[in-house]
Amino acid sequence: MDDAVTACEIPKTSPWIVVGDDGQSISMKSDGAESQGADLEDIVCVLDQLDTPDSVTSRMGSTRALDGRQNAEWNDLSASWGYHPDDGLDMVVEVVQ
Image (cartoon, rainbow, N blue to C red):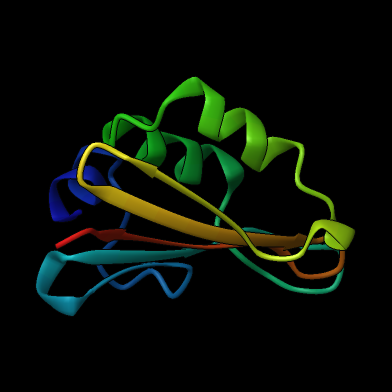
């Protein structure tokens, strides 16, 4: 997770993209109509660095507020995310143990 943040040149002090659990998880939040967050390009960069499959990023991109919290797993990672136009995309990716 730390390597992905470094490769994407995201400041360690970013309140919107935060590595946690001693590098075993990352929480990301994008801009919404009524809230601030990370640029979507930064989140996409991190997901690319984590080798997120196209099928998962496609599901993320098509998630609606009515869909509730979504989940996906790939390699040794698990992601959960939700989306609301007012709040933006809210996502956690963690290492599966």
